[in-house]
Image (cartoon, rainbow, N blue to C red; front, side, top):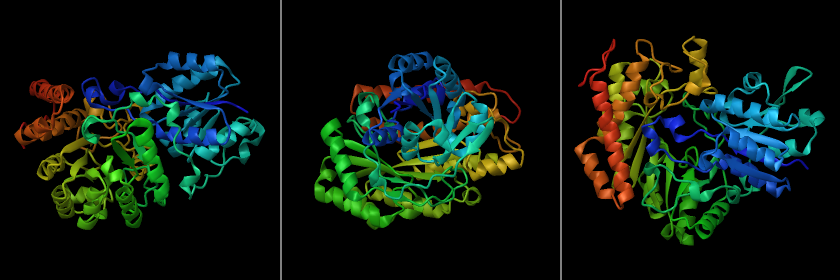
Length: 491
C-alpha cells in the first residue's frame, strides 16, 4: 500500500495580500485536503497532511519533511496564484526521488488539466474533479492501471492522456469528517470580518455545488447543489464543540440559502438540539434567496452574520456578469437583514469588463450607501475555468498568463502588470482605486465609532488601529502621485 502526504503550498499572507494588508488576512483549515485525508484513512491508506501555510514552512522545509518520512505519493493542491511556487516544489520533490509520485489537484488543475501538465512537466498526474475517490484509486493502482481512473491527466509514451471526468458524488455523507486531527488546529484564525468575539471559529462544509452562472466564478458550470444530511451536520458541529471547544462556526457552502427546505431543516435542528445556544455561526448567501421568514429563523438558530456577493453598484454591470439581482433588491435585502439583527459582510468587485471609472465610483458609493459592517473590494481577475476568462481570452484581452499575478489583491502588491484591465483604464488607476475604496468605506466617522464599540480587548484595538494607519498611509502616498489619468480626489 502506497503512503500519501497531502501538501498545502507555502503561500504566506504577504504573498497573497501584500506587505501592508498581510496583517488582516486569516489562515483557514485546508478542508479539501482534510476531506481527502479522512476518506483515505477510512479506506486504510496511510496518509498525513503538511499545511505549510499554517506551519510557516518553506519549500526546503517541506521537501526535508517528505524525505524524512519517505512518502510514496505527494499530493499538492493549489489555486492559480500559487503556480510558480507549486512548480518549484514539484521539481524539488521529484528530484528527491524519481520514484516518488507527484500528483497535482485543486481549482487551477480542474480548469486547465492538460496545460498544467504541460507547464509543470515533472508532475506525474494532474487531477480534474473532486479528489477523494480519485486519490484512493491512485494509491491502490499501478501506473499501468491509471487509464482506468476517472478524472486524471497523465503522460503515456510521450502523449497526454485525459480520462473522463469523474461524476460528482451525490451522497456526501459517504465521505467522513475532514481529518482535522492531522492539522495544526490551534494555528488557524479567520479574518476579523468572519468572527464574533475572540472564541475559536472552525469551518464546516455542509454543501457542494452551485446552480448559478455568474461569469466570474469557476462554479458557473451550473453544478447541482449537494448537501450533507442534517443529522450528519449536527453530529459534526457537536464534534467541533466537544473536541475543539468551538464557540462559533463558519458554515461553508457556495451559497447556503439556495435550498430553502434544507436550510429550514438545519436551522430547526440547531434549535431543537440546543446547538443554537452553544455556538453562533456565519455563512454566505445570495441576495435573491432570503426573505424575512428565513432570516428570522436563521437568527433564532444562531446566525449572527451573512456574507452577500453584491459585486457592483451598476445595474449594467450586474446584468453583464449574470448576477440576476437588481440594485433595489440589494438595498431591500440588506436593510431587512440589518432589521433582523444580522450583520452583513459585502463583497464588491472593481475593474469588471467594460467598467468605466464612473461605474467604479458607483460601486464604491453604493457600498457606502448599503453600509454593511464589513466590505471587501477586490480587483477583477478572470480566473481560468470561468466564462469571463474564456470570453476575454478569445477577445485577446488577457494581458498576461503569468499565473502568479492572478490575485484579486494585486492593487495592494503594487504589481506592474495585471491579468486584465478594462479598455481605457490603467493598472496604476485600479491599484489606487482598490486602496481608495477601502479608505473611503472604513475611514468614515460612523464606521470608526462602530468598530470602537466592538472593541473587547487590546488585541482588537491594536488590529483596528493598525487598519486605520495602513489606510491613512495610502492617502499620503497617493497624494504625490502624478500619472496620466490620475484619479481626482473627489468625484
